[in-house]
Length: 98
Image (cartoon, rainbow, N blue to C red):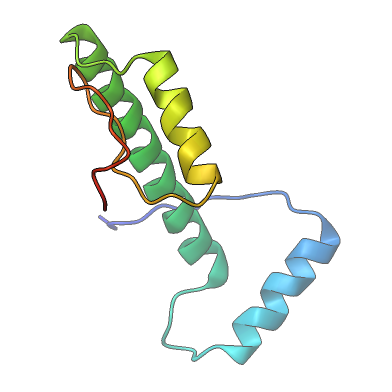
């Protein structure tokens, strides 16, 4: 039994041509661009959903940052100040340098 499956994907002709051209430039021993791209996309999606789960867990546990505190911090950063971001249950102070 194989440890991989065949996946068919319909691509626009221009994208398929670009992938083919890239595959010709790469070392034949390296993975094909489609497989590499799918793996990167899959990893990014896993990280995204893990971050959401982490955030939901923090919210459920009451580890939240006040909206006004966050807005003040973002404004300070936008003005070029280097400040630690606000953390739950801790008052924000721009004097705390990064």
